[in-house]
Image (tube, rainbow, N blue to C red):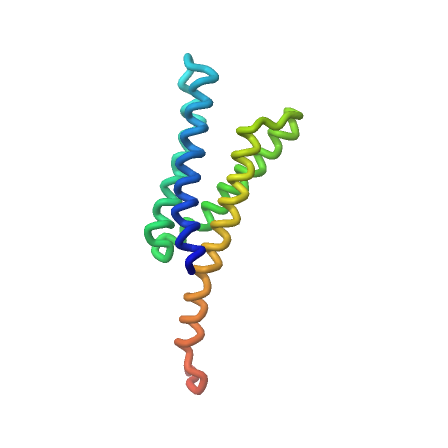
Length: 132
């Protein structure tokens, strides 16, 4: 349980840092076009989901599959970019390894949330009673 207490704020902090890096790098590359900010805007949803998961994971457990899907797509895109460009920069490797950390963290949180609900459903059904 103490691992989950560390993973939830760590996930949120990582997502904030990742968003700041994306925004600053995209802004620095081309300062004349604001289209780059439009490309990084959907990444702002991940820190919000991480914040809600940190605050109350049981209440916002519907965000977990969405977060898993977003991280999987992000890992696939970054790995494809590294292969297609035939170069791996320090920022690409940082984001890729961070996304792998985030994926592992969210899987651990998802497994931790599933345990209490499964135990509650088992204890609710009494062994000697049947519904007619």
